[in-house]
Image 1 (tube, rainbow, N blue to C red):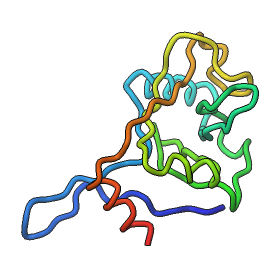
Image 2 (cartoon, rainbow, N blue to C red):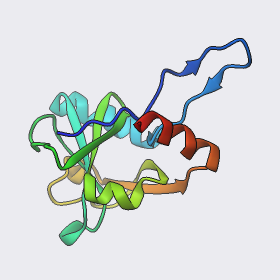
Image 3 (tube, rainbow, N blue to C red):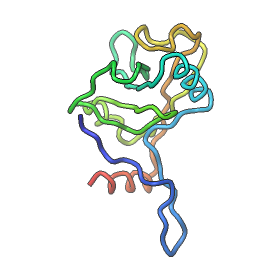
Length: 141
């Protein structure tokens, strides 16, 4: 499994002003509440951004370890204490965006744990600012 170090501690201290870090993946309060509910039912969880096909491109929630990650996966960070992965090929297209995972009414992916809850995880995104992208690029090297 390929793990890129993509985030720094919350604050980087210097003699000047502290610099806040940017995360590649975040979760809304609604998503965090659903994650907590699923963790209470299923234990430790993991996420993988699906690459398409039957469920489109959506965040899929699994019991931790159920989906085997490897060299072709990138760990983007954590949401609600759960690791979040994406394929390296898909990351090439999404590397300039921050993923914001939300939970909305509807049916989740057929293999994702939230299906019976009447909610589904949804990926929203925004482009990183030039400054944020430069910080992230510097951390990859």
